Length: 38
Image 1 (cartoon, rainbow, N blue to C red):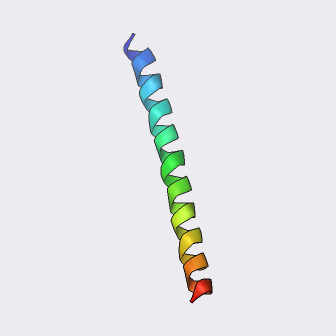
Image 2 (image 1 turned 180 degrees about the horizontal axis):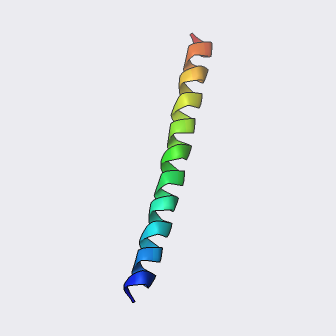
């Protein structure tokens, strides 16, 4: 049972990391766009 919960927790952490990576990519993209506008 514990191993099952551990797998879920690892999966959630991976999803969270992917989400934060997307956010980082988006913020970098936004910085580039705002620089080009100015």
